Image 1: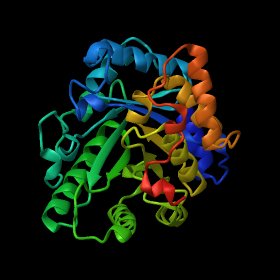
Image 2 (image 1 turned 180 degrees about the vertical axis):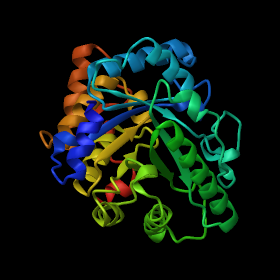
Image 3 (image 1 turned 90 degrees about the horizontal axis):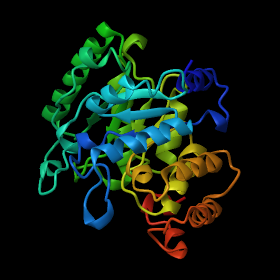
Image 4 (image 1 turned 180 degrees about the horizontal axis):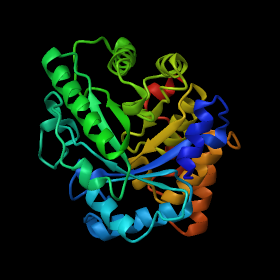
Length: 324
């Protein structure tokens, strides 16, 4: 039994302890950013796909994450190597790529309302990965939201026929949709509950992946139906190391049980060391500021130059996190 399944079982039964917190390394960036997804390399160039794969192998072998989220082509390669056989980590695939994740250099797709689209074929992915991510963005636009929900319904029916499980990612809109900023978290929560109320257990997502919209919004959703709606957070932009530790700490304290971080892990100086420290923060072994100092000490031990000076890396830059 994979660690993901063991932890989900305990969470659903109301037996959660911080050791059951689920962490996913989101290495599906090639489906949004294209060539720069692996991150910056030496000399101003982007890292290569081979370097991206090596980072996934290293994180998977560390056993610190429960899920490795990948593009279908990457998952086919790494599962074909046997990377996930006999280990605790579950291979997962991004099964749709809505237009609001299209982030090519020079592109402007994210300035338009999200449109549903799927590159990956669920039946062709199913033989090597039985878990996938499906994403939606609610736009407060009846035509766009209807289109997205109908596409999600079609996906669920297709996934059910081949035995594919999924988790649901819900983005905040990238621009003003006519909902006051102070009420956006409530709009997102209501949209999620409304969209899933008619979904029976056979098609229901295992958990959610969404933006942290503050303590109140997180607490409200996490407490609503904790055995059925297990809430997870996405990482967003890299920010500072303090942002990373504050996000996982605050979200977990207010009810999140999953963290799925992409750039926050991938762009870290030492990703494995960062995730190890995330585990300690969730376990409350260390406070976020103390964790930043410990992470910098580990970088010094590894002879890795930090991107930011310690004083700068201790800053909280995300306004939502500043609110505590």
